[in-house]
Image (cartoon, rainbow, N blue to C red; front, side, top):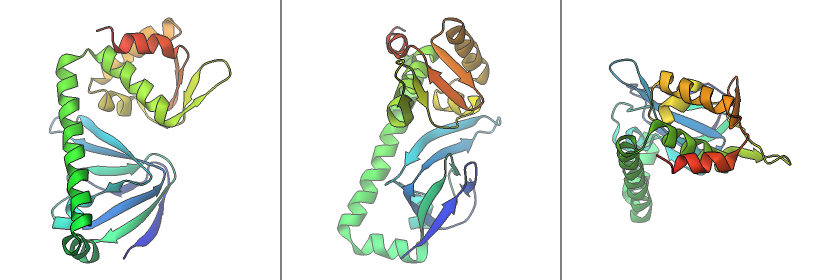
Length: 203
């Protein structure tokens, strides 16, 4: 039904508001889902990994793209054109049910993010985010540090943590001073993960 495609880090796979009509199954790598608000703020809707379906809405209903998909790492994907994917979904109730569960899960994810943005501090959200990223993409070191092997910019981290770039910079500066994290160009090292775990629940 589809064709294999390879994308380099930072390469755009789908651009918001485009009229392309294909979906992807991610075979390997990580993809960032983002959208641009009217004020120019980039909101990160999530990260998607191998085994996940992305671009499924426009790929099934032919509408304009609601978000941009950008490769965060080397990505291999199976591109499924709407002319094949749409009829495939409609013809197989099990596939349609899987697609429905995928969309529902992402709506719940968005709802949880909105609730967290109102109920938790930026520090809590960032600490929880870094711990989450360390579990998915981290490389534990013999010293107890964890290196997050994902090239996220500070704008990416701010978007994922639902905070401003200024607030993110202030929090990271405090954490670097306290030797909680070390940051470099698109690199984060969790020096004291236990302290981040405490901060994630401290308010």
